[in-house]
Image 1 (tube, rainbow, N blue to C red):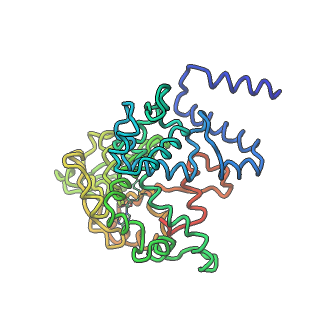
Image 2: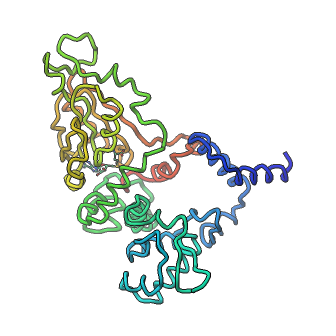
Image 3: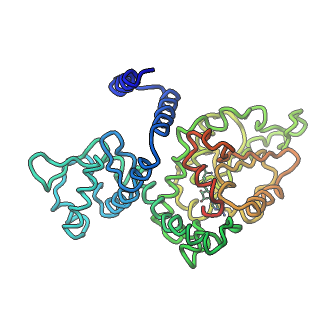
Length: 379
Ligand SMILES: C[S@@+](CC[C@H](N)C(=O)[O-])C[C@H]1O[C@@H](n2cnc3c(N)ncnc32)[C@H](O)[C@@H]1O
């Protein structure tokens, strides 16, 4: 195909008013990424990483300085009234920051198309269509706060590996996190000590998997495997209840399940399934679950998965995006604690980040997979 024709069809796609279906959108994005990777020279890549000036199309290609400027803007309340125009004086008053610093940050934010400079005044900023994405109520604001909190650990990796003879961490409690934040053995202890990060992380965990493909219960035979059954039922997965007590039977324990988002979706999808659902997480996470936010069938329970599982004989113990974060021995310890609670009919369901040997095949999981390629035990 001639280059002109390729360019013409790309322009046609860009200008089209049609909104693609979700799976078409993902395929289009993957095709664009492939084309870009094919065309970029090594120099292009380095220049983009170090000095890229995002244009309208690539405003979301956020580089480190941009990310930090955005985090500063979040902390300085610059995104707090995202639907109104705002003056420099108002921003200085709201943030309590130095005027020059606010002006410089606004210059960066306008270059990222996160605000639009007013055509009539150089110290007035209009909201852009993207400003609201970083307002305090938005999960993207939480994501920026949460991921920038982890940058010291990431930045310390070269020194960490150099001092450890370029060997993978073997303990979650004595890995790069502890190296970067002496005195805090792992990220979850750190988050527990910093409520802003804990809250941001809770929001991020609840939303990061949304739209990443079908939920597990859409392809797992839920009714066949997890239906609450009474003693004597022929179902082979009989972690069974006494007759008449099917509603008391524990169907699923979601271990490290955050604020209960997966079980909430499960309960909505299977409203007639009998039995109880339990979400477990660290005390700081469970305490953050808003009152009355869980459906009646879901109970929240503080539990550290490095201690024995207290719910005995559930039909399924579910772990999503837990094991990949830990070195092998700690992953085994988590599973041993589950094993101790299982009875003959219990299942363990693991829903995990897996990186293909040929990592180019990884597609949409790439961000997370990249991390897993290098590290287990960072977080
Ligand atoms: C990557 S998130 C996954 C959350 C959820 N399973 C999901 O897939 O959306 C990891 C979760 O494990 C929890 N967690 C970390 N250490 C834990 C521990 N020792 N015991 C219980 N939960 C823990 C975190 O608080 C967090 O909610």
